[in-house]
Length: 420
Ligand SMILES: Cc1cc2nc3c(=O)[nH]c(=O)nc-3n(C[C@H](O)[C@H](O)[C@H](O)COP(=O)(O)OP(=O)(O)OC[C@H]3O[C@@H](n4cnc5c(N)ncnc54)[C@H](O)[C@@H]3O)c2cc1C
Ligand SMILES: NC(=O)c1ccc[n+]([C@@H]2O[C@H](COP(=O)([O-])OP(=O)(O)OC[C@H]3O[C@@H](n4cnc5c(N)ncnc54)[C@H](OP(=O)(O)O)[C@@H]3O)[C@@H](O)[C@H]2O)c1
Image 1 (cartoon, helix red, strand yellow):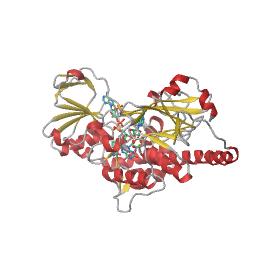
Image 2 (cartoon, helix red, strand yellow):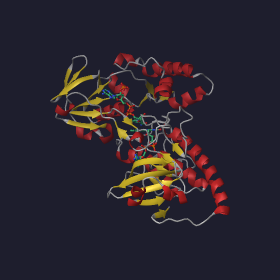
Image 3 (cartoon, helix red, strand yellow):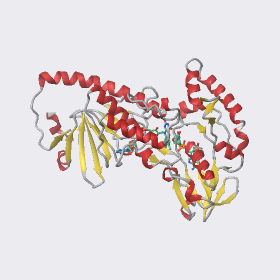
Image 4 (cartoon, protein in one colour):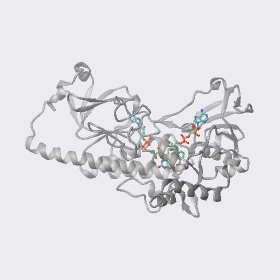
Protein backbone atom coordinates (compact mmCIF):
# COMPACT_ATOMS: atom_id res chain seq x y z
CA UNK A 1 0.00 0.00 0.00
CA UNK A 2 2.82 2.41 0.78
CA UNK A 3 3.80 2.69 -2.87
CA UNK A 4 0.38 4.13 -3.65
CA UNK A 5 1.92 7.43 -2.64
CA UNK A 6 4.66 7.15 -5.24
CA UNK A 7 2.18 7.24 -8.13
CA UNK A 8 3.35 9.27 -11.17
CA UNK A 9 0.98 12.23 -11.65
CA UNK A 10 0.97 13.29 -8.04
CA UNK A 11 -1.24 16.37 -8.35
CA UNK A 12 -3.91 14.62 -10.36
CA UNK A 13 -3.91 11.84 -7.79
CA UNK A 14 -4.68 14.17 -4.89
CA UNK A 15 -7.16 16.45 -6.69
CA UNK A 16 -10.01 13.94 -6.59
CA UNK A 17 -11.53 11.60 -4.04
CA UNK A 18 -9.64 8.34 -3.96
CA UNK A 19 -11.04 5.10 -2.74
CA UNK A 20 -8.97 2.05 -2.06
CA UNK A 21 -10.96 -1.06 -2.95
CA UNK A 22 -10.19 -4.16 -1.03
CA UNK A 23 -10.72 -6.68 -3.84
CA UNK A 24 -11.70 -6.25 -7.47
CA UNK A 25 -13.57 -3.41 -9.17
CA UNK A 26 -16.22 -4.70 -11.57
CA UNK A 27 -17.27 -2.25 -14.29
CA UNK A 28 -20.90 -2.84 -15.29
CA UNK A 29 -23.92 -4.16 -13.40
CA UNK A 30 -25.48 -6.16 -16.21
CA UNK A 31 -25.88 -9.94 -16.03
CA UNK A 32 -22.09 -10.42 -16.48
CA UNK A 33 -21.11 -8.06 -13.67
CA UNK A 34 -23.77 -9.49 -11.36
CA UNK A 35 -22.72 -13.08 -12.09
CA UNK A 36 -19.08 -12.25 -11.33
CA UNK A 37 -20.03 -10.42 -8.13
CA UNK A 38 -22.18 -13.36 -6.96
CA UNK A 39 -19.37 -15.86 -7.56
CA UNK A 40 -16.91 -13.59 -5.73
CA UNK A 41 -19.35 -13.30 -2.83
CA UNK A 42 -19.36 -17.09 -2.57
CA UNK A 43 -15.54 -17.04 -2.47
CA UNK A 44 -15.63 -14.48 0.34
CA UNK A 45 -13.90 -11.83 -1.81
CA UNK A 46 -15.11 -8.25 -1.34
CA UNK A 47 -15.72 -6.16 -4.50
CA UNK A 48 -17.14 -2.92 -5.83
CA UNK A 49 -19.47 -2.78 -8.84
CA UNK A 50 -19.54 0.50 -10.79
CA UNK A 51 -22.56 1.17 -13.02
CA UNK A 52 -23.17 4.21 -15.24
CA UNK A 53 -26.98 3.83 -15.13
CA UNK A 54 -29.27 4.17 -12.12
CA UNK A 55 -30.24 0.50 -12.04
CA UNK A 56 -28.90 -2.99 -12.60
CA UNK A 57 -29.22 -4.57 -16.08
CA UNK A 58 -29.81 -1.22 -17.76
CA UNK A 59 -29.75 -2.78 -21.23
CA UNK A 60 -32.73 -4.92 -20.28
CA UNK A 61 -34.54 -2.28 -18.26
CA UNK A 62 -34.06 0.76 -20.49
CA UNK A 63 -32.91 -0.24 -23.96
CA UNK A 64 -35.12 -3.14 -25.05
CA UNK A 65 -38.60 -3.36 -26.53
CA UNK A 66 -41.67 -4.46 -24.60
CA UNK A 67 -42.42 -7.76 -26.33
CA UNK A 68 -38.88 -9.12 -25.79
CA UNK A 69 -38.49 -12.64 -24.40
CA UNK A 70 -35.33 -14.68 -24.01
CA UNK A 71 -34.76 -16.52 -27.30
CA UNK A 72 -33.00 -19.45 -25.68
CA UNK A 73 -34.57 -21.86 -23.17
CA UNK A 74 -34.25 -20.77 -19.58
CA UNK A 75 -31.62 -23.34 -18.56
CA UNK A 76 -29.15 -21.57 -20.90
CA UNK A 77 -29.88 -18.11 -19.52
CA UNK A 78 -29.79 -18.42 -15.74
CA UNK A 79 -26.80 -17.05 -13.89
CA UNK A 80 -24.53 -19.15 -11.65
CA UNK A 81 -25.55 -20.28 -8.16
CA UNK A 82 -29.24 -19.29 -8.39
CA UNK A 83 -31.63 -20.96 -10.86
CA UNK A 84 -34.73 -19.30 -12.30
CA UNK A 85 -37.89 -19.82 -10.23
CA UNK A 86 -39.56 -23.10 -11.18
CA UNK A 87 -42.74 -21.44 -12.40
CA UNK A 88 -40.90 -19.43 -15.08
CA UNK A 89 -41.89 -20.42 -18.63
CA UNK A 90 -39.41 -22.04 -21.03
CA UNK A 91 -38.71 -18.59 -22.57
CA UNK A 92 -38.96 -15.99 -19.77
CA UNK A 93 -40.27 -12.55 -20.64
CA UNK A 94 -38.09 -9.47 -20.30
CA UNK A 95 -39.99 -8.51 -17.08
CA UNK A 96 -39.43 -11.96 -15.58
CA UNK A 97 -35.76 -11.83 -16.47
CA UNK A 98 -35.36 -8.40 -14.87
CA UNK A 99 -37.21 -9.59 -11.72
CA UNK A 100 -34.88 -12.56 -11.56
CA UNK A 101 -31.82 -10.28 -11.86
CA UNK A 102 -33.18 -7.98 -9.13
CA UNK A 103 -33.65 -10.91 -6.77
CA UNK A 104 -30.23 -12.27 -7.79
CA UNK A 105 -28.57 -9.00 -6.77
CA UNK A 106 -30.51 -8.98 -3.51
CA UNK A 107 -29.73 -12.61 -2.73
CA UNK A 108 -25.98 -12.08 -3.13
CA UNK A 109 -26.07 -8.64 -1.50
CA UNK A 110 -24.74 -6.89 -4.58
CA UNK A 111 -25.14 -3.13 -4.20
CA UNK A 112 -23.59 -1.43 -7.21
CA UNK A 113 -22.50 2.19 -7.13
CA UNK A 114 -25.04 3.62 -9.56
CA UNK A 115 -24.65 6.68 -11.77
CA UNK A 116 -20.89 6.22 -11.86
CA UNK A 117 -19.61 6.09 -15.39
CA UNK A 118 -16.06 4.83 -15.76
CA UNK A 119 -14.14 7.39 -17.82
CA UNK A 120 -10.75 5.76 -17.74
CA UNK A 121 -8.90 2.85 -16.24
CA UNK A 122 -5.20 2.26 -16.39
CA UNK A 123 -2.65 0.03 -14.79
CA UNK A 124 -0.04 1.83 -12.76
CA UNK A 125 3.20 -0.10 -13.23
CA UNK A 126 4.91 1.59 -10.26
CA UNK A 127 2.32 0.59 -7.72
CA UNK A 128 1.07 -2.56 -9.44
CA UNK A 129 -2.50 -1.27 -9.09
CA UNK A 130 -5.39 -0.26 -11.35
CA UNK A 131 -6.60 3.35 -11.25
CA UNK A 132 -10.23 3.59 -12.28
CA UNK A 133 -11.69 7.08 -12.70
CA UNK A 134 -15.42 7.67 -12.67
CA UNK A 135 -17.67 10.67 -13.05
CA UNK A 136 -21.12 10.66 -11.49
CA UNK A 137 -24.35 12.25 -12.69
CA UNK A 138 -23.60 15.18 -10.36
CA UNK A 139 -20.17 15.56 -12.07
CA UNK A 140 -18.35 14.33 -8.99
CA UNK A 141 -15.11 12.57 -9.85
CA UNK A 142 -13.86 9.57 -7.93
CA UNK A 143 -10.80 7.43 -8.40
CA UNK A 144 -10.93 3.79 -7.35
CA UNK A 145 -7.67 2.01 -6.76
CA UNK A 146 -7.60 -1.74 -6.88
CA UNK A 147 -5.56 -4.83 -7.52
CA UNK A 148 -8.00 -6.46 -9.98
CA UNK A 149 -10.21 -4.99 -12.69
CA UNK A 150 -13.14 -6.91 -14.18
CA UNK A 151 -14.52 -5.49 -17.44
CA UNK A 152 -18.26 -6.28 -17.61
CA UNK A 153 -19.52 -3.45 -19.83
CA UNK A 154 -20.94 -5.83 -22.43
CA UNK A 155 -20.87 -6.42 -26.16
CA UNK A 156 -23.82 -4.05 -26.60
CA UNK A 157 -22.66 -0.99 -24.63
CA UNK A 158 -23.26 1.54 -27.45
CA UNK A 159 -25.68 1.63 -30.38
CA UNK A 160 -24.33 1.50 -33.90
CA UNK A 161 -25.95 4.25 -35.95
CA UNK A 162 -24.64 4.21 -39.52
CA UNK A 163 -23.99 7.41 -41.37
CA UNK A 164 -26.33 7.02 -44.34
CA UNK A 165 -26.43 9.67 -47.06
CA UNK A 166 -29.34 12.08 -46.68
CA UNK A 167 -30.60 10.74 -43.35
CA UNK A 168 -30.38 14.22 -41.83
CA UNK A 169 -32.77 15.53 -44.53
CA UNK A 170 -35.31 12.71 -44.08
CA UNK A 171 -37.56 14.78 -41.83
CA UNK A 172 -39.52 11.95 -40.20
CA UNK A 173 -38.88 10.13 -36.95
CA UNK A 174 -35.58 8.22 -36.79
CA UNK A 175 -34.73 6.00 -33.83
CA UNK A 176 -32.38 3.18 -32.95
CA UNK A 177 -33.91 -0.18 -32.01
CA UNK A 178 -32.69 0.46 -28.44
CA UNK A 179 -35.25 3.31 -28.21
CA UNK A 180 -38.10 1.31 -29.75
CA UNK A 181 -40.64 0.09 -27.19
CA UNK A 182 -43.70 -1.01 -29.18
CA UNK A 183 -45.46 -0.58 -32.51
CA UNK A 184 -48.41 1.11 -30.87
CA UNK A 185 -47.31 4.60 -31.92
CA UNK A 186 -46.72 3.48 -35.52
CA UNK A 187 -50.26 2.30 -36.33
CA UNK A 188 -50.99 2.96 -40.02
CA UNK A 189 -47.43 4.24 -40.63
CA UNK A 190 -44.91 3.12 -43.22
CA UNK A 191 -41.75 2.23 -41.30
CA UNK A 192 -38.34 1.38 -42.72
CA UNK A 193 -36.53 -1.07 -40.43
CA UNK A 194 -32.82 -1.04 -41.26
CA UNK A 195 -31.17 -4.40 -40.43
CA UNK A 196 -32.36 -7.99 -40.27
CA UNK A 197 -30.70 -9.37 -37.13
CA UNK A 198 -32.83 -10.60 -34.24
CA UNK A 199 -33.78 -6.98 -33.41
CA UNK A 200 -34.74 -6.01 -36.98
CA UNK A 201 -36.86 -9.13 -37.43
CA UNK A 202 -38.66 -8.74 -34.11
CA UNK A 203 -39.27 -4.99 -34.49
CA UNK A 204 -40.72 -5.66 -37.97
CA UNK A 205 -42.98 -8.37 -36.51
CA UNK A 206 -44.10 -6.07 -33.70
CA UNK A 207 -44.88 -3.28 -36.19
CA UNK A 208 -47.05 -5.71 -38.20
CA UNK A 209 -48.87 -6.76 -35.05
CA UNK A 210 -49.71 -3.09 -34.45
CA UNK A 211 -51.05 -2.54 -37.97
CA UNK A 212 -48.06 -0.61 -39.26
CA UNK A 213 -46.43 -1.40 -42.65
CA UNK A 214 -42.77 -2.30 -42.21
CA UNK A 215 -40.18 -2.64 -44.97
CA UNK A 216 -37.06 -4.40 -43.70
CA UNK A 217 -33.66 -3.65 -45.24
CA UNK A 218 -31.61 -6.80 -45.90
CA UNK A 219 -28.36 -5.61 -47.43
CA UNK A 220 -26.42 -8.92 -47.24
CA UNK A 221 -26.96 -12.55 -46.27
CA UNK A 222 -28.60 -13.86 -43.10
CA UNK A 223 -29.19 -17.23 -41.48
CA UNK A 224 -32.73 -17.63 -40.21
CA UNK A 225 -33.35 -20.73 -38.10
CA UNK A 226 -36.55 -21.86 -36.38
CA UNK A 227 -36.50 -21.29 -32.62
CA UNK A 228 -37.62 -24.92 -32.20
CA UNK A 229 -37.45 -28.05 -34.27
CA UNK A 230 -40.01 -30.78 -33.45
CA UNK A 231 -40.70 -29.11 -30.09
CA UNK A 232 -37.02 -29.06 -29.12
CA UNK A 233 -35.04 -25.81 -28.95
CA UNK A 234 -32.78 -25.45 -32.01
CA UNK A 235 -30.01 -24.14 -29.78
CA UNK A 236 -30.28 -27.16 -27.49
CA UNK A 237 -30.21 -29.52 -30.47
CA UNK A 238 -27.08 -27.83 -31.79
CA UNK A 239 -25.36 -28.05 -28.39
CA UNK A 240 -26.27 -31.75 -28.21
CA UNK A 241 -25.05 -32.54 -31.72
CA UNK A 242 -21.78 -30.69 -31.20
CA UNK A 243 -20.87 -33.17 -28.47
CA UNK A 244 -20.46 -35.92 -31.08
CA UNK A 245 -20.25 -34.32 -34.51
CA UNK A 246 -17.87 -31.86 -36.18
CA UNK A 247 -19.10 -28.29 -36.54
CA UNK A 248 -19.44 -28.39 -40.34
CA UNK A 249 -21.70 -31.44 -40.10
CA UNK A 250 -23.85 -29.89 -37.35
CA UNK A 251 -24.19 -26.81 -39.62
CA UNK A 252 -25.30 -28.97 -42.55
CA UNK A 253 -27.86 -30.82 -40.39
CA UNK A 254 -29.17 -27.55 -38.95
CA UNK A 255 -29.69 -26.14 -42.43
CA UNK A 256 -31.50 -29.28 -43.61
CA UNK A 257 -33.78 -29.16 -40.56
CA UNK A 258 -34.34 -25.41 -41.04
CA UNK A 259 -35.29 -26.08 -44.68
CA UNK A 260 -37.90 -28.64 -43.57
CA UNK A 261 -39.42 -26.27 -41.00
CA UNK A 262 -39.10 -22.90 -42.78
CA UNK A 263 -38.77 -23.82 -46.45
CA UNK A 264 -36.41 -21.97 -48.76
CA UNK A 265 -35.84 -18.59 -47.10
CA UNK A 266 -33.91 -17.36 -50.16
CA UNK A 267 -37.18 -17.20 -52.09
CA UNK A 268 -38.27 -14.39 -49.73
CA UNK A 269 -35.13 -12.32 -50.31
CA UNK A 270 -33.24 -13.74 -47.31
CA UNK A 271 -30.08 -15.07 -48.94
CA UNK A 272 -28.08 -17.48 -46.74
CA UNK A 273 -24.35 -16.82 -46.12
CA UNK A 274 -21.96 -19.34 -47.69
CA UNK A 275 -20.63 -20.24 -44.24
CA UNK A 276 -22.89 -22.31 -41.95
CA UNK A 277 -24.65 -20.61 -38.98
CA UNK A 278 -22.43 -22.01 -36.23
CA UNK A 279 -19.21 -21.52 -38.15
CA UNK A 280 -20.24 -17.94 -38.89
CA UNK A 281 -21.06 -17.36 -35.23
CA UNK A 282 -17.72 -18.82 -34.11
CA UNK A 283 -15.54 -17.04 -36.67
CA UNK A 284 -17.31 -13.67 -37.11
CA UNK A 285 -19.55 -13.52 -34.03
CA UNK A 286 -22.63 -13.08 -36.24
CA UNK A 287 -25.71 -14.44 -34.46
CA UNK A 288 -28.26 -16.35 -36.56
CA UNK A 289 -31.82 -15.12 -36.37
CA UNK A 290 -34.11 -17.39 -34.38
CA UNK A 291 -37.48 -16.98 -36.01
CA UNK A 292 -40.40 -16.28 -33.73
CA UNK A 293 -42.96 -15.34 -36.37
CA UNK A 294 -41.39 -12.70 -38.64
CA UNK A 295 -40.88 -15.21 -41.46
CA UNK A 296 -44.60 -15.92 -41.65
CA UNK A 297 -45.22 -12.17 -42.04
CA UNK A 298 -42.54 -11.97 -44.73
CA UNK A 299 -44.20 -14.87 -46.57
CA UNK A 300 -47.59 -13.16 -46.40
CA UNK A 301 -46.09 -9.87 -47.63
CA UNK A 302 -46.93 -8.02 -44.39
CA UNK A 303 -43.21 -7.41 -43.95
CA UNK A 304 -41.64 -6.25 -47.18
CA UNK A 305 -38.00 -7.30 -47.67
CA UNK A 306 -35.96 -4.63 -49.49
CA UNK A 307 -32.27 -4.39 -50.50
CA UNK A 308 -29.63 -1.96 -49.19
CA UNK A 309 -30.10 1.80 -48.96
CA UNK A 310 -28.61 4.25 -51.45
CA UNK A 311 -29.78 7.49 -49.86
CA UNK A 312 -32.56 9.19 -47.94
CA UNK A 313 -34.38 12.35 -48.95
CA UNK A 314 -37.37 14.18 -47.50
CA UNK A 315 -39.95 11.46 -46.59
CA UNK A 316 -38.34 8.99 -48.93
CA UNK A 317 -35.66 6.33 -49.23
CA UNK A 318 -33.91 5.25 -52.41
CA UNK A 319 -32.65 1.66 -52.47
CA UNK A 320 -29.60 0.27 -54.25
CA UNK A 321 -31.84 -1.23 -56.97
CA UNK A 322 -33.16 2.25 -57.76
CA UNK A 323 -36.58 1.65 -56.14
CA UNK A 324 -37.95 4.61 -54.14
CA UNK A 325 -40.20 4.15 -51.12
CA UNK A 326 -42.27 6.77 -49.31
CA UNK A 327 -41.81 6.26 -45.57
CA UNK A 328 -42.91 7.94 -42.35
CA UNK A 329 -40.31 6.64 -39.88
CA UNK A 330 -37.02 4.78 -39.67
CA UNK A 331 -35.92 2.25 -37.04
CA UNK A 332 -32.20 1.55 -37.12
CA UNK A 333 -31.84 -2.07 -36.00
CA UNK A 334 -28.20 -1.80 -36.96
CA UNK A 335 -26.65 -3.40 -33.90
CA UNK A 336 -24.35 -2.49 -31.05
CA UNK A 337 -20.70 -2.28 -30.13
CA UNK A 338 -18.41 -2.54 -27.13
CA UNK A 339 -17.24 0.74 -25.54
CA UNK A 340 -14.11 -0.65 -23.88
CA UNK A 341 -11.59 1.26 -26.08
CA UNK A 342 -13.18 4.55 -25.00
CA UNK A 343 -12.17 4.10 -21.36
CA UNK A 344 -9.68 1.24 -20.88
CA UNK A 345 -6.12 2.43 -21.48
CA UNK A 346 -4.72 -0.92 -22.48
CA UNK A 347 -3.98 -2.48 -25.86
CA UNK A 348 -2.47 -5.88 -25.15
CA UNK A 349 -5.52 -7.83 -24.00
CA UNK A 350 -8.33 -5.89 -25.72
CA UNK A 351 -8.29 -5.14 -29.42
CA UNK A 352 -9.46 -1.93 -31.07
CA UNK A 353 -12.98 -3.33 -31.54
CA UNK A 354 -13.40 -3.61 -27.76
CA UNK A 355 -13.24 -7.40 -27.57
CA UNK A 356 -10.44 -9.51 -26.09
CA UNK A 357 -7.86 -10.50 -28.72
CA UNK A 358 -7.50 -14.11 -27.54
CA UNK A 359 -10.12 -16.38 -29.07
CA UNK A 360 -12.58 -18.35 -26.96
CA UNK A 361 -11.96 -19.91 -24.43
CA UNK A 362 -8.88 -17.79 -23.60
CA UNK A 363 -10.32 -14.28 -23.61
CA UNK A 364 -11.34 -14.02 -19.96
CA UNK A 365 -8.00 -13.27 -18.30
CA UNK A 366 -5.39 -10.68 -19.23
CA UNK A 367 -2.24 -9.63 -17.43
CA UNK A 368 -1.82 -7.64 -14.23
CA UNK A 369 -5.19 -8.55 -12.74
CA UNK A 370 -7.31 -7.62 -15.78
CA UNK A 371 -10.37 -9.75 -16.62
CA UNK A 372 -13.20 -9.70 -19.19
CA UNK A 373 -16.63 -11.23 -18.66
CA UNK A 374 -19.35 -11.53 -21.30
CA UNK A 375 -17.28 -10.87 -24.44
CA UNK A 376 -17.35 -14.32 -26.06
CA UNK A 377 -20.49 -13.75 -28.20
CA UNK A 378 -22.01 -16.66 -26.33
CA UNK A 379 -24.81 -14.76 -24.64
CA UNK A 380 -25.76 -15.30 -21.04
CA UNK A 381 -24.35 -18.83 -20.78
CA UNK A 382 -20.95 -17.57 -21.99
CA UNK A 383 -21.06 -14.78 -19.40
CA UNK A 384 -21.83 -17.26 -16.62
CA UNK A 385 -18.89 -19.49 -17.42
CA UNK A 386 -16.52 -16.49 -17.63
CA UNK A 387 -17.81 -15.25 -14.27
CA UNK A 388 -17.15 -18.57 -12.53
CA UNK A 389 -13.59 -18.77 -13.90
CA UNK A 390 -12.77 -15.20 -12.97
CA UNK A 391 -14.11 -15.54 -9.41
CA UNK A 392 -12.18 -18.74 -8.88
CA UNK A 393 -8.97 -17.17 -10.17
CA UNK A 394 -9.28 -14.04 -8.05
CA UNK A 395 -10.53 -16.11 -5.10
CA UNK A 396 -7.39 -18.27 -5.14
CA UNK A 397 -5.12 -15.21 -5.19
CA UNK A 398 -7.21 -13.49 -2.55
CA UNK A 399 -7.00 -16.46 -0.18
CA UNK A 400 -3.25 -16.77 -0.68
CA UNK A 401 -2.65 -13.07 -0.14
CA UNK A 402 -4.96 -12.60 2.83
CA UNK A 403 -3.40 -15.62 4.54
CA UNK A 404 0.06 -14.12 4.03
CA UNK A 405 -1.11 -10.71 5.16
CA UNK A 406 -2.22 -12.11 8.53
CA UNK A 407 1.45 -12.60 9.42
CA UNK A 408 2.78 -9.40 7.82
CA UNK A 409 -0.01 -6.89 8.46
CA UNK A 410 1.17 -3.41 9.29
CA UNK A 411 -0.56 -0.09 9.58
CA UNK A 412 -0.58 1.89 6.38
CA UNK A 413 -0.93 5.57 5.75
CA UNK A 414 -4.18 6.59 3.97
CA UNK A 415 -4.38 10.36 4.02
CA UNK A 416 -6.91 10.95 1.24
CA UNK A 417 -8.05 7.46 0.80
CA UNK A 418 -11.29 6.08 2.05
CA UNK A 419 -11.61 2.35 2.04
CA UNK A 420 -14.24 -0.04 0.70
C1 LIG B 1 -32.47 -6.74 -27.54
C2 LIG B 1 -31.50 -7.75 -26.98
C3 LIG B 1 -31.94 -9.00 -26.58
C4 LIG B 1 -31.06 -9.96 -26.10
N1 LIG B 1 -31.53 -11.21 -25.75
C5 LIG B 1 -30.66 -12.16 -25.33
C6 LIG B 1 -31.11 -13.47 -24.97
O1 LIG B 1 -32.29 -13.77 -25.06
N2 LIG B 1 -30.21 -14.38 -24.54
C7 LIG B 1 -28.88 -14.08 -24.43
O2 LIG B 1 -28.10 -14.93 -24.03
N3 LIG B 1 -28.42 -12.85 -24.77
C8 LIG B 1 -29.27 -11.89 -25.22
N4 LIG B 1 -28.81 -10.64 -25.57
C9 LIG B 1 -27.39 -10.33 -25.47
C10 LIG B 1 -27.20 -9.53 -24.16
O3 LIG B 1 -26.32 -8.51 -24.42
C11 LIG B 1 -26.70 -10.40 -23.02
O4 LIG B 1 -27.51 -11.44 -22.80
C12 LIG B 1 -26.54 -9.68 -21.68
O5 LIG B 1 -27.29 -8.51 -21.50
C13 LIG B 1 -25.10 -9.36 -21.57
O6 LIG B 1 -24.87 -8.94 -20.27
P1 LIG B 1 -23.62 -8.02 -19.94
O7 LIG B 1 -23.67 -7.79 -18.48
O8 LIG B 1 -22.38 -8.62 -20.52
O9 LIG B 1 -23.87 -6.69 -20.75
P2 LIG B 1 -25.01 -5.60 -20.52
O10 LIG B 1 -26.30 -6.25 -20.20
O11 LIG B 1 -24.94 -4.69 -21.68
O12 LIG B 1 -24.52 -4.84 -19.19
C14 LIG B 1 -23.38 -4.01 -19.20
C15 LIG B 1 -23.56 -2.91 -18.15
O13 LIG B 1 -22.38 -2.12 -18.13
C16 LIG B 1 -22.75 -0.75 -17.97
N5 LIG B 1 -21.67 0.08 -18.51
C17 LIG B 1 -21.27 0.21 -19.79
N6 LIG B 1 -20.25 1.08 -19.87
C18 LIG B 1 -20.00 1.52 -18.63
C19 LIG B 1 -19.04 2.43 -18.08
N7 LIG B 1 -18.14 3.06 -18.84
N8 LIG B 1 -19.08 2.66 -16.74
C20 LIG B 1 -19.98 2.02 -15.93
N9 LIG B 1 -20.90 1.15 -16.41
C21 LIG B 1 -20.90 0.89 -17.74
C22 LIG B 1 -24.04 -0.64 -18.78
O14 LIG B 1 -24.80 0.48 -18.37
C23 LIG B 1 -24.72 -1.97 -18.49
O15 LIG B 1 -25.60 -1.89 -17.39
C24 LIG B 1 -29.69 -9.66 -26.03
C25 LIG B 1 -29.24 -8.38 -26.43
C26 LIG B 1 -30.14 -7.44 -26.89
C27 LIG B 1 -29.62 -6.09 -27.34
N1 LIG C 1 -34.70 -12.12 -27.84
C1 LIG C 1 -33.44 -12.19 -28.16
O1 LIG C 1 -32.77 -13.13 -27.79
C2 LIG C 1 -32.79 -11.10 -28.95
C3 LIG C 1 -33.53 -10.09 -29.56
C4 LIG C 1 -32.84 -9.06 -30.21
C5 LIG C 1 -31.44 -9.06 -30.23
N2 LIG C 1 -30.76 -10.08 -29.63
C6 LIG C 1 -29.30 -10.13 -29.62
O2 LIG C 1 -28.76 -8.83 -29.53
C7 LIG C 1 -27.56 -8.73 -30.29
C8 LIG C 1 -27.71 -7.59 -31.29
O3 LIG C 1 -28.70 -7.94 -32.28
P1 LIG C 1 -29.21 -6.89 -33.34
O4 LIG C 1 -30.18 -7.54 -34.21
O5 LIG C 1 -29.60 -5.65 -32.60
O6 LIG C 1 -27.87 -6.49 -34.15
P2 LIG C 1 -27.02 -7.36 -35.20
O7 LIG C 1 -27.24 -8.81 -35.00
O8 LIG C 1 -25.65 -6.84 -35.13
O9 LIG C 1 -27.66 -6.99 -36.62
C9 LIG C 1 -27.48 -5.73 -37.19
C10 LIG C 1 -28.15 -5.71 -38.55
O10 LIG C 1 -28.06 -4.40 -39.08
C11 LIG C 1 -27.58 -4.48 -40.42
N3 LIG C 1 -26.94 -3.22 -40.76
C12 LIG C 1 -25.98 -2.56 -40.10
N4 LIG C 1 -25.67 -1.42 -40.72
C13 LIG C 1 -26.47 -1.34 -41.82
C14 LIG C 1 -26.63 -0.41 -42.86
N5 LIG C 1 -25.89 0.71 -42.94
N6 LIG C 1 -27.54 -0.65 -43.83
C15 LIG C 1 -28.28 -1.77 -43.79
N7 LIG C 1 -28.19 -2.70 -42.82
C16 LIG C 1 -27.28 -2.49 -41.84
C17 LIG C 1 -26.67 -5.67 -40.42
O11 LIG C 1 -26.45 -6.11 -41.73
P3 LIG C 1 -25.11 -6.91 -42.14
O12 LIG C 1 -25.30 -8.29 -41.61
O13 LIG C 1 -25.11 -6.81 -43.60
O14 LIG C 1 -23.97 -6.18 -41.49
C18 LIG C 1 -27.52 -6.64 -39.58
O15 LIG C 1 -28.52 -7.21 -40.36
C19 LIG C 1 -27.39 -10.09 -30.95
O16 LIG C 1 -26.54 -10.86 -30.17
C20 LIG C 1 -28.78 -10.67 -30.93
O17 LIG C 1 -28.82 -12.06 -30.94
C21 LIG C 1 -31.41 -11.09 -29.02
